[in-house]
Length: 576
Image 1 (tube, rainbow, N blue to C red):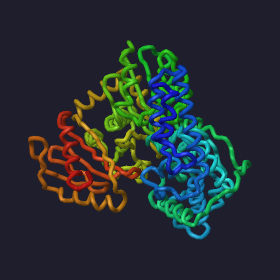
Image 2 (cartoon, one colour):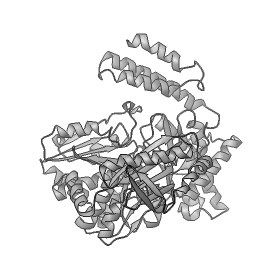
Image 3 (tube, rainbow, N blue to C red):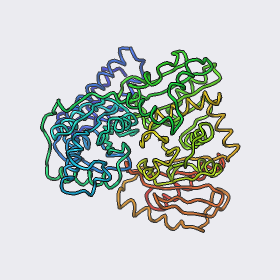
Image 4 (cartoon, rainbow, N blue to C red):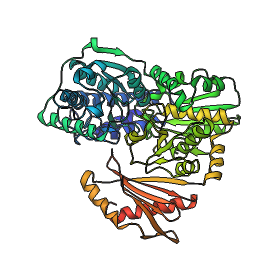
């Protein structure tokens, strides 16, 4: 069916004229993207479908700019900020109101010192003078949302260092280098195209503590309930442009003595070699504005950059580091003759990264453990390993063999705060990592530097390095799954409490064998460690109406069996 025949039918199916509430913009966008993708870029049909996409986004912008109601879902800051649907939860007024909540929190310093320690400033005057770092990822209307936040901040006397489109890691670095009071990054990380998000980091540049985000949540809901808004224009005298990537380079150099990663040596080493190929997939995200400068000096014939054009639809894919999304890189690497191959895929705000060498996929369960071993044994650094409770025990095995401790908190990068100055590596299974001397925020770019240093230091593909470590410390086979549920908050927690029947000593049927639950860790959902060292864990998402389950088997064949057991347990609670 041609564009001319199909487009009016689609518009009629998804749009209610002059009625944003009854229009399904994202249902329409998905259909339009699928039709656009059926044609090659540069063809007339491709261009025609792209015009339909652009026109739909214009309608969505009108909703974003004009909506005056409260968000459909009450504002809540989860493990990594506030996320919501564009137009329905996340629109100009709601962004202004949440920013106003942050301003109000700092204004409270004049009458109460309770939040001062967590905020890292002693007074409102100090917060205004040190100001904010502000940026956004590639989501639709990111710049518009940044302008709304900037107007609220500057009209209340806060200086703003404006980075424009940028990654989470470079904004975090900028807070430290500029000695800012806080940062705002308008991003929902790896969520699908209909989402927007709002990340707030305090003066330590890491994800804010729960006490702070709870206060922002409470203030935002109060402001929305009272119908307050901030409509003053931005004060341009308080706005300064910011090169956030330059701040990242400065921080990396400052931290060399802690982590041993020397940027000039890494890039210089790659410049002189012709036995490797590097492929990076930006999936249209914010890393596309940095990646060529970040890798400047690597010969172009050694470098493949994929999906580095602007596209808020992400080409129709879920924009996360995943096996499916790695396929293009894997195919590209396999066609190359070079003996050394490294591929990386980066999520929209560049705080997550996953690797492949064209043969072996290496997610953060494996790479985090490899990074710990590399810094400890090749760089001669000492310190504990920090990984979230849902992450593979591969790092535990390595750290214990090296005589080091392991810190294992609940899910969320902010949970590493107690050991941020003690841990050699902090990482989580969802592909986030940072290292000693760097930001307390996960950062895909530091992960990429680690992988490149491993490649040239060991003259070996990551798959070979991994195989060597597995032979020495044991093989671990992690897996994960998730289900969408119709419960959230206390109701979901109550339902999941039915899993308490699976306590220590309970026997489980795992395939054709029986295993005993040896240990239960209940700091974040429920993690049940079995008598052979394998485990399964069930926890609610902190950002979406989903329940996630994680497993780790001691053989590849048993991983699917453990995933099935975890799903069976969920079914028993009545959620499925």
